[in-house]
Image 1 (tube, one colour):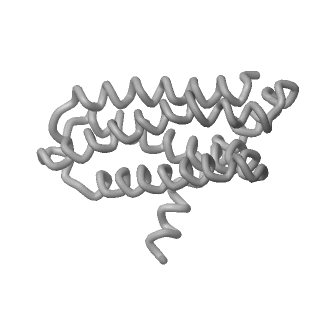
Image 2 (cartoon, helix red, strand yellow):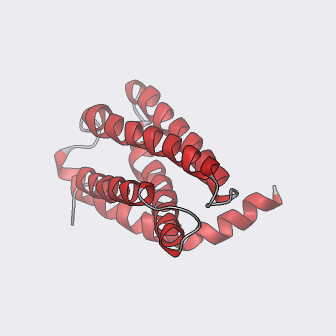
Length: 158
């Protein structure tokens, strides 16, 4: 089982590849739709699992709260951008423009997590707990993946 850091980084690497692949698509094509769905669902489940397993532990320490809050706030901003993109015509130039904003912001977020947040987290999550947190993250991500449509419907009711 991968450590929490390996599990998150593996997801990030997959997300970076999907972002690059999406950027190369054009129009309202089947490829763009398929890649977007894959990216959207994986990022949604990744962020929720990360907040519930990784960031909940980091926020338990006073000195980790700012980093955790900052990252969770970025998750919300990225989520808002993804929902905006979901509501746009994929063949419009505006979709690609907003997508490039999402790509830039998300790449910054991933780099920040891997370079700064991981260092802080290693002071809270001891090496002996890495695999346990990795297992929790992976399990929670699967649960969250199954809840995407339900959460979308619930947010429409709000």
